[in-house]
Amino acid sequence: MSTDTAQAQDEKIYTFLDEDIQRAKDLVGIYHAVRKREQFSKASPDIMRAFARSYGDDNPLFTDEDYGLDTRWAGQIAPPMINIALTKDLLADSIPKEQRRPPFRGIHVFVSGSTTEWYRPVYDGDIIYSFEGFDNVELKESEFAGRSLVVTRIFVQFNQRAEIVQIQRVITIHTERHESKKRKKYDTIEAASYTPEEIAAIDEIYAAERRRGAETRYWEDVSVGDQIPTMVKGPLTVTDMVVFHSGGYGFAPYTPCTGKLWHENRQRIGAFYIPNEQGIPDVAQRIHWDAEYARSIGLPASYDYGMMRDCWLTHFLTNWIGDDGWVESMSSQMRKFNYLGDTHTFTGEVVGKRVDGDRYLVDVEFRGTSQRGEVTCPATATVSLPSRESGLAGLRTPPRELETIAAKMLKRHGELRAARRRAQA
Image (cartoon, rainbow, N blue to C red; front, side):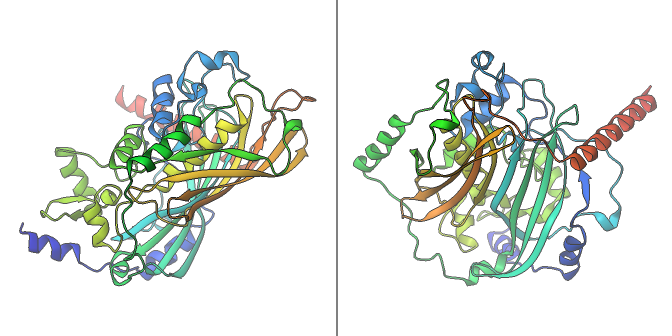
């Protein structure tokens, strides 16, 4: 294939199909078992450690299989965002054709924010399953890319005992790729560069980073207005993206792969493979590391994953709350791109305290600010802290109706697995 032919294919115009938009709206409130697995399917000390380190977190609660034995958790637990790398596929009945997700062929997708609620830890040996659905669908005009579709997807993760571990709602923006090329909004953004002195200043923040760890932070000792110690992440590099993938993120559902598997995957989702400047079909996901491809759709450089910044945000929280605290919920927004070369400084403060039953809660507002002075990822969170009165950080009870759905799906999974074994006997 010639380069001219490849470029012509790359310039093919993809637009929203009205039937895809209507299908998305019709699916709101309908749940289906997640039948694909993430990179990993069962928690282990190595997987928990690798995932934490993939976003720069060396908290021994997540990375050391012995350290947690002396904490209230009585063992190593997984980092809060482990769901993005750890899910086992559920066996389930075929989804009716009218309930299948629209393909949105050729449409570019990126994450703009998420809200996550955590209910219990993930331990060594836990298997995490999930069911999902559309929580909300909204068609709107976007300054960046003309017509866009905002889809909020809900993911309910549960363990092998049908106990809900967490519930996550992810806001995804679907845009028509060709539209972004017509916009000039980002033409004035220049790639970041650093002097040795500027790198040294970043290093000082890294060197000062501290974890609360085993020193218990009690609810009574926290006051509204307290500042959370500053954290830094970056400058963002292609290596960061490679390391994040090595920890398990970014493989489902598109499954970037190589060799014969690359060939087979192109037969499955051909529209996901966009020819590069050499005419070679490559994943659209390379927008996160291929600067030339990013520029071809109207951006000045490659950029991170929204979920990477969510990991950074939870890292900021877990450093502050210590071993005995619990992140109960977090809501984040991805307002700006985080381009290769960008550096983010994280700051935050306590904005509220309250007691809810046996839970002693602290509300936090925090954010990541780039070297341009732009707040790219504002967030709010509620954390549960130990109280001198109760002694432990209380955990919330998951929604009963969703645990019922989880139990039914796990039961059906077992029935189908048993039927498969009988058929193979």
